[in-house]
Image 1 (cartoon, rainbow, N blue to C red):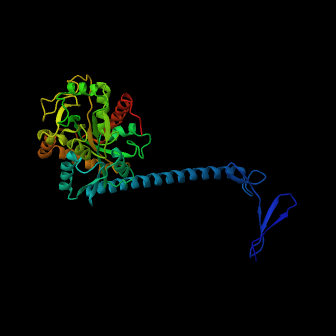
Image 2: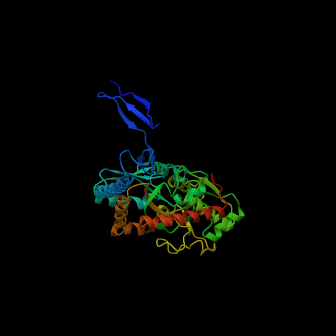
Image 3: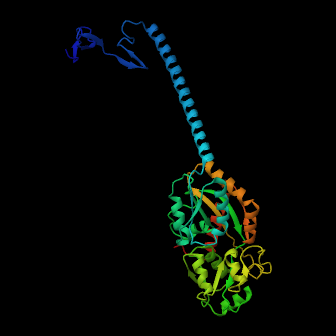
Amino acid sequence: MTDRPVAIRRDDDQSVTMRRHEDGPVAFPRHEYRSGALLGRDGAISGVAPQEEGRRCVMRRRAFRECAVRALGAALLGATMLTASLVGVTAATAQSYPAKPVRVIVPFTAGSPVEIPARPVLGKLAEWTGQRFLVDNRPGASGTIGTELVARAPADGYTILYTNCSHSSNPSNYKKLPYDSLADFTPITQTNRTYGNLLVVHPVVPARSVKEFIALAKKHPNKLHYASAGVGSPPHITAALFNSMAGIELRHVPYKGTSVAFTDVLGGYVEVMFSSPPFTYPYIQAGKVRALGIGGPRRIPMLPDLPTFHEAGLTGYEMTCYHGMWFPKGTPQEIVRRVQTDVAKALATPDVRQHFETNALIPVGNTSEEFAEFLRKDIARQAEIAKKIGLVPQ
């Protein structure tokens, strides 16, 4: 027999639902739902006094509250246990990191100035962890090509960006970057800062001081050319600010990297370059180029007689750079702290400190949070410089 319901009428006009069962029809009065209880038309469940029903309702409410409290407690306990387990997993991951070689993207050509601080630091990390930290040069577009690769990489600690202050200037140099210099990365540490770029000239240029060079450039506007590692690169920004403050016009010849640019300066194809001291110093010593001044706020130890641009007459000129390391956004903080701690330790070793001193690099090794704050300020500063020199974003 089926369970098809049949509606009938009673003499008191109370609607009743009849449901057929195998043992015969059973009648159930239709109820209304009021204040959380099923009530008949007389305001109480059939056969139960209103007082008794009220007592039952109170008991049901208490039971519901107790059940809800128990459920909430169980949920909170479960969440706490899950959080604790996740913390344990990430801590264990940091302790075992790295479990395989780490890819370090340098977004410039092989042999660029960025590698001068990078290689000894990475060498220490490899020595201490037993895993290789492999430099992967991905040059082009003032470092943006390689930087984008890191922004899109998995946030697992096995891809690191090692670059320079172009990371701060590129937001002002391009109308639209394929990444956000702040939001898409987790800063690890600033490995060092620099003394600024040197103004060097090919021996064919007769000037022997910053003052003589400015006078020569004013006498022959747009006749002198300077090479750079690309539009928006540190050498380009250094030169553009020099042009603006000196009131001269040098013609810009951008290249895809420092090495290829400097090669043409050595060959006499381009007369001028603003280049990093460690990269340029051997050629100065060999007489291949002549140094006229430096862009930082103080003189460089390896060339103590060389004046700053400020001392040479460009009052207030100051342009330095930095090198640093980043992970993709979302990399576990335990891994970030592990690498930052190891880098700071590497920067304190005698051989690395000697290497930095020899190459006119000032070690830093700050925390991720300190580096992030520095970057916010430096990006704003670079935007002001770009506006001052009239740099048109590409």
